[in-house]
Length: 580
Image 1 (cartoon, helix red, strand yellow):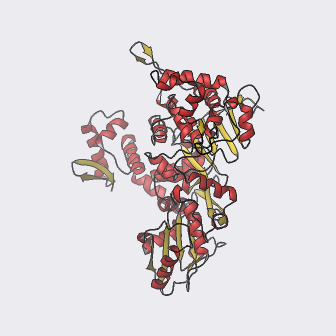
Image 2: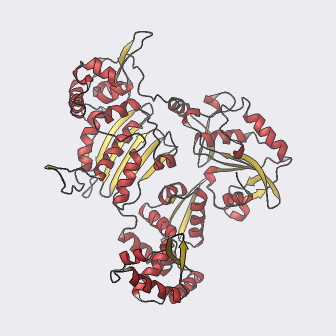
Image 3: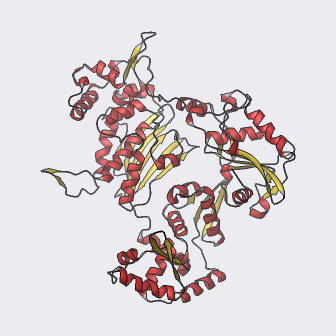
């Protein structure tokens, strides 16, 4: 349900790429159905009827004009009658997704469109998926290309896209050395498995790499079989739209673009098994391996090693090999980049949460899992997040590019707030930076480290909703700390490198600084509460070297309470201290 307050929040802080306003004062606009299709096929969004948007207007107060929906009960019935007819291919809305309300004396009809489940995509209009499917980008709604429609149709199947028979591709197209290496690994991980004793064709058939059509009696390699074990020439004949590329851009000297590269050069059979086996040692070669024994055996593996392997395997099993693109892996001094063609089948937030798994190539996924590569279903990405969290590195960035039709995962091996970042922000913004909310500091840090940020990126960094992020961004723009750069309906934000403290901000800083006229210990405690919202006595002990007991922490906290800066808060059996 959306309230009038929610609508006002959306108009002020909402993402314009996921918000569409239409006049519709006397009837439901025909273009509503195009936007419904676009939101359903992309990342969801809200349609507001009874509001006109002036796209060229930069002033938030003048950008929207209320026009009122006449006879809202009739318009609402018309909407439900139409969506339940053959106008659209699927009704993905519930009763709570549509309604109307009064907003400052004006009637607005709202439609909250979720992202459609992959099984229902493409959501199209007028009974024609090729001409009636839409998506959303920074310009607004656009007709899907034929390739985009075909990709969504392929992804709508739970059986994946790698099990189909490839006409004309036989055992002669298998690279026997690759298959032999895989079978050795397979037997090592599954020493008692009955498949170990069967001949190659039967082994591949059991694995899903070879198939027989029982109706026509045609037989041959599957997509998974050719890509995983095929000869490079055969793979390029069938999948010349796909390339594999690994770049090592660490320790570069002047004028060099890479220090190591693996691509198609004729020195190796270009199948997926060989690609992953060649790049994994390169990726983890510089990672720290702490000395650890299990019994008498040294264990060199770490959570970070496992996370990097998981990222590489995820790139391969989720790629769309029927699209044009590159399986690209880049090793940087400060992390890794994994990129694959195709868009995510699940929403980004669902992947961050874990517990969900819809592999585009389940047979390839199983082939890797049988040799110890790839985590349990739905736990792969959380494995990466946990490893990076334990190292206190910046949260991995998973980006689904709807326009380029590629997914990028960036693993940053740097802290969320590296010292040079903090130094830069303190130098640029002065003392006022210390009095920002913790979320605002993280936004500025992310903008500095990544050159620019967007609402979508910050949702994964902060774990907040779009409107909450929007409110923080608008506040930082109002403070002149961020500069908004608009591209149609898409907005990115960058650090204002020419920032000058405004008089009112200077006064606020002076008041805060004079108010916090404390010794060094009390200043640290006070600044911690400012940044984090609360503190416990144990956190004081952990943070302050000169305080070794909770009793000593209480003494310091009481000094701040007596000055009116902190207050004691009790929740059940728990006690903490917050800003007064």
